[in-house]
Image (cartoon, rainbow, N blue to C red):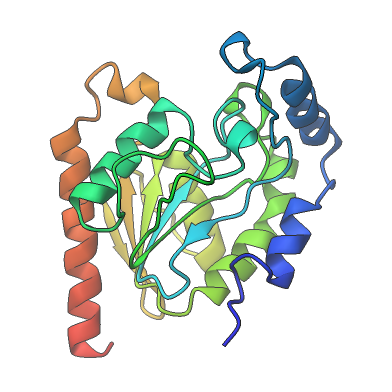
Length: 231
């Protein structure tokens, strides 16, 4: 059966062709022209970024938005930047990725039982989408999560990803974000909080590799428990 979320799907086409937010369109395209000196000979993607991975995934990793010189350059989430280095090393150690690095969209990275995506699909200035931009993107996330029918755990990277998941599922009152916080939904997946893999967290030691490994170990345990009980 054709994937509802992967390449070739209607959702994929709509996302990569979206121009709904003028500020984000202008920023992503300007970055793709001005470039960072280290990448001056590369052709930037400069468009919205879709999620990727295993369409039958039980584990979804939900981030904030593409990085200006990472995903906005390479065309794939968490690819070509240090945040992705941390994320995919951990996913490789957890058996969710076939390799520990993600440097380009053609590097052979494949995910098993995992899907990686973001709440906002375009790179925002200063990594800060405006509320209206976040809301304009939310229908894409809604359709994406609906298309991931086997998802039982959502690893929410940072407060932004956590809040996006809470809004999507209509959770009230809103639980406070924290690393390792779990929100079990009655008719939905478990939300699992994780400090974002940003350099602000990894360079300062707020997030360590053992902490990240523990999150993915817990995500796998939750997914396995859900599968074994049939719930």
